[in-house]
Image (cartoon, rainbow, N blue to C red; front, top):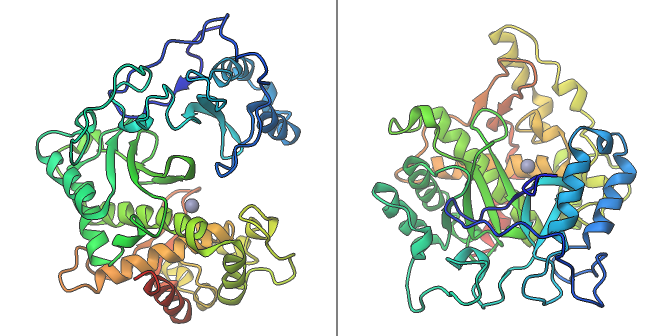
Length: 393
Ligand SMILES: [Zn+2]
């Protein structure tokens, strides 16, 4: 077996990789691999999480490469470098086997510096220089990007980190302007757990462009498009980037501020989500993951631009504040999509808007693409979002 079958999670683009676990590496006596729950982290031992995934995905477990992944995941998740009882890594993310291992232990070498802020996260003898203000030296960008990175941290407490991709200067500047224009600064500061902005390879501005990583207090975005380096983002690309960023802020807002019961309530009252389903008791309740009653209908986009444009502006979507086809996936996505439309509209209303024109409007050009129409946000739900955000100030 290749020792690096699982990539380790690189905390930033220059992060050192730890040595692969040796065959002899064992958890100290008395600690079982089926680790206990760690209160507050929403985490469980690898074996338990894996067993849970396996019951529903026996077929996927027979796919090529899975046995190699499992062997690798077992070896890495058994490591506990500083012996504090918290495993170094986790390999099941969002209830699925992950190719990148995520740090489970906030401080793998136990030197008191969180992994990301530690220039030597696997060496307890080396600690970050103290008394340094601003962006830690090992995460500092250079040239024109450095200024944008410093602004995001100083003004909003958001630390932009190059990971498997490089943040574009344009993107960082657009996000700072957007947070100002939408008066959304508190959404990355005091109001949610979002503190880090990663650039990940694998995200792009056409399809899945961002993700919210609750365990990492982070949002990840697409990085600088290689082919377009230096040319800047087009108007549509900027709207998509900011829309994706705001969408992830919406997920963070639900987890950190709104709660499952309130999400369930607004989904029913503003979104027409199935009133017959059992009440949601937590974030992963089935009621919050059921598709919208209009899901199949929303997928039947007629061909021809004129008909398609008419279709995505149909009154039925607006009645349920379905601002995109993707919003019909489940209540979480419905809320995040509406939240994004609300924040982008706020940004457009600012005195010196960084975004202009009507709300984001996209027609599917190929099968598998989704339509978007931000103008489908109903005024009642828009007002609810405005009032709820107002309470943060
Ligand atoms: Zn989402």
